[in-house]
Amino acid sequence: MKMKLFQTICRQLRSSKGFSVESAALVAFSTSSYSCGRKKKVNPYEEVDQEKYSNLVQSVLSSRGVAHTPGSVEEDALLCGPVSKPKPPKQGEDRRVPQNWFPIFNPERSDKPNASDPSVPLKIPLQRNVIPSVTRVLQQTMTKQQVFWLERWKQRMILELGEDGFKEYNSNIFLQGKRFHEALESILSPQETLKERDENLLKSGYIESVQHILKDVSGVRALESAVQHETLNYIGLLDCVAEYQGKLCVIDWKTSEKPKPFIQSTFDNPLQVVAYMGAMNHDTNYSFQVQCGLIVVAYKDGSPAHPHFMDAELCSQYWAKWLLRLEEYTEKKKNQNIQKPE
Image (cartoon, rainbow, N blue to C red):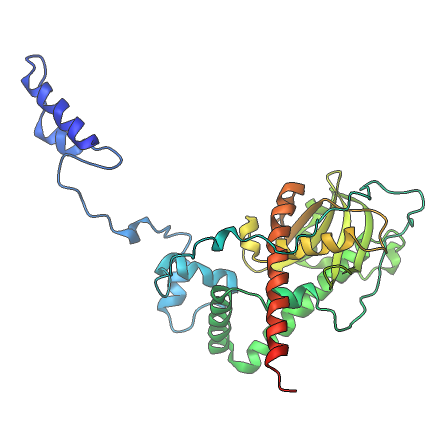
């Protein structure tokens, strides 16, 4: 339609005495969808951000590339395209709603502290039992695509480091995360004096990375504290409940080897946060409720951490997704029990 309109205008201009249109101009002139000249074929690889993916391209072309995290492997999909042609989603698949709805917020509670609330942050120990944890539910309900990328990353790391080297790598990652959380707990615990704190823990790049975040954190209510949702039947261990820029949040501290400036880059972390939030809001061990979440991604090199704030509306959206994952886990376990021989 646009092309016909443009050709009509060109004919009218040629027939006009006061106008002359050169053929070269016609070739150069183009709209977003058409051009009068022969359309040049666009190479899709020319649109790739070469600087952004330079390290990835080098590692793919070389026999020994740099170590990748699952996040960096996802960039392969952006560069090379999907492994296989995805099937179109089934009708209604993306509009699923939880069959057994339960609210994330508790109308009988306030986010304001009560006079009877303890002056020190709550630290309820996690009781290991048959009730599934938030982490287990998320791990066992990953999508096929998530499982594929995770397995691909694992195989690439084993190829790079060997079986023993990969185990050592995972142990080091776990140890770094544990020390990072211990250091944060030490910093945020008001009852601990500076003399009691392990100065070695406070010198890590991760702690340096979150300094600008800690300036906005106050009024700590809970640290490394267990939560249980008796109605939905799951447990978890949250990192922190405190005010961030004046709003009470469930705070989840994460470490990463690559930048994660967007909440979409944090994978299932938002589901983890809202799962803890929903459980805590209905756990009798807590007299208050939380309506906001915060994911903080810290970096080993000390570069400024990325905070991802989740308001009540965003938390409600992720809560619906968490309920779907929880239902999927329950259904999967039920089917496994049915298939077990008596």
